[in-house]
Length: 282
Image (cartoon, rainbow, N blue to C red; front, side, top):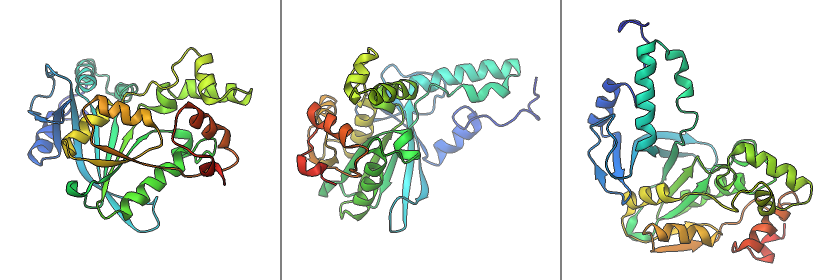
């Protein structure tokens, strides 16, 4: 086993000395489902009500816009997931298993919040709640419109006088089914099914994303003040409204249309997305 002198540094959300420093710096926050700040001093105790733990802000220059842009980056995760990681980490420390720490977070969805510009709550800030898409956001795949939507959202928020926020939901790959199942749906799509039919063939919902954590963070930022949401998906508006965000004005968000993803976008249109025939002309 490692001695106190030789053991490697732990993750910042596990090492109690780092946690104390972050709390003192105002970089660690805990909120409940209504966006109200809670006492964040207890590391291992799970609050009696649902809670999110938030780290930030962290200045981060980004390169997805034409003009130079530095955003303020936050990450947030459900407190119940963090508490379980804390417990496992304590067990691994006792057993000298620090080399296994990388496996602790394999199933933990750590989401992000980007504060872009100087958001003005009195002027309806512009918001994008973006579901992660490894193939589109990272690889630049043209099978979907996710990557172009992400870049376009950052550009639009950057150029908006009211500023705004981008909430990036890490656990939403493939509308919530995960990367492995998403890859399987791609093979089914190549055999003729559309994106929703492929989900059903696997026995999965059309859309299983959970927007409750995004809603909590937006309530923490804005309370009940109105904002504009970049989306074509009426279900996203409905889901946020179900969590108390009712003063939301939808702003159409079409980007990256080409021959590769027209069939995918047409399926979205037929499913209810506010996409017009003119939007699909590239």
